[in-house]
Image 1 (cartoon, one colour):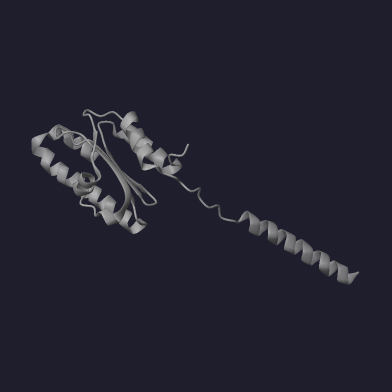
Image 2 (tube, helix red, strand yellow):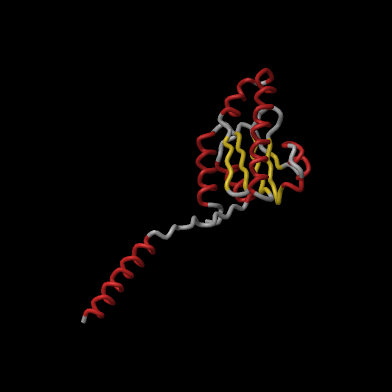
Amino acid sequence: MRKNTGVIIALAVFSVLAVFLSSCKKETPKDIVIDINVAADKLLSSVSYDDELSLLDDEAALNLYGIEESAIVEGVVYVGTAATVEEIAIFRAVDEETVDDIIARYNDRINLQRTVYADYRPAEVPKLDAAVVKKQGTVAILCISNDAEAAEQIVKDITENGTDK
């Protein structure tokens, strides 16, 4: 009987331990899939812009931010005319280290535009101050518009939920 009591206690301890360990299992975040063209289309169609934005070709898009072609997998950039600072840029970098460099280049462009437009068109500067710059994984997103609140909400949705809905 004493032998069975030891086995029962051991099984009880093992069962409690198994339940405890299974409840401590970390949940892995869902994989967030971002189609950069779908993301750009959402920003283009759902955010208000003063200017009509036009799609840049790949070479012009890379030159605008000083990004090497080897640093990205894909990219899409829409810009307005010189009358506004409005633009959308989304690049998928080759790795997470490179995406940080792209974010830095977005910020460099914002600062350059701030300097240029301070005298040229000062009414555009608040758009730069409210620019939305975010990253998710290897995707870097920039949106400069006259509706930063809407842009922020859409970018948040894209970076938290992806575009595969």
